Amino acid sequence: MKVESLIKKLDKAHEGSRKLDTDITKMIFPEIAEKRADDLQTSKETFWEMHGIRTRIMDYTTSIDSALTLIPSECKMYALYWASGGMPAKAIISQSGMGVFIGGGYSYSTPALAICVAALKARYRPLATKAKDW
Image (cartoon, rainbow, N blue to C red; front, side):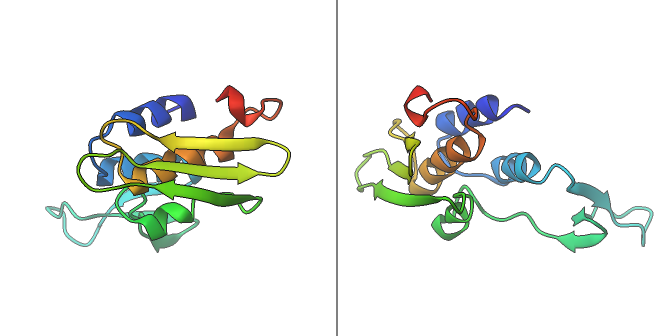
């Protein structure tokens, strides 16, 4: 999946989900693989593995703390706006010399989803493109 497609998917989401968390993880860590437990033939247990070590998918789309880990180290969280009563959340991430990346602002954006979108824009912007072009 291309980053633009994932961002559109996140923008349209009404709430976070494990499927979206998995899509984000696969984008950031393409070497992660879903494995099936071998101990029982009938077992449907699956787990995630990267470089031979079991790992877990973080709750990026439902946890503000997890979503914040997506922000590149060269960027800073500038602002996060949200209010109860149906107001959409908006996240603004800034990067010196590149402007700002905005996520959220849509009718169903949650704080975690807004951060995910802004962080992915900051991570995967075309290198020659200023943030305002996103």
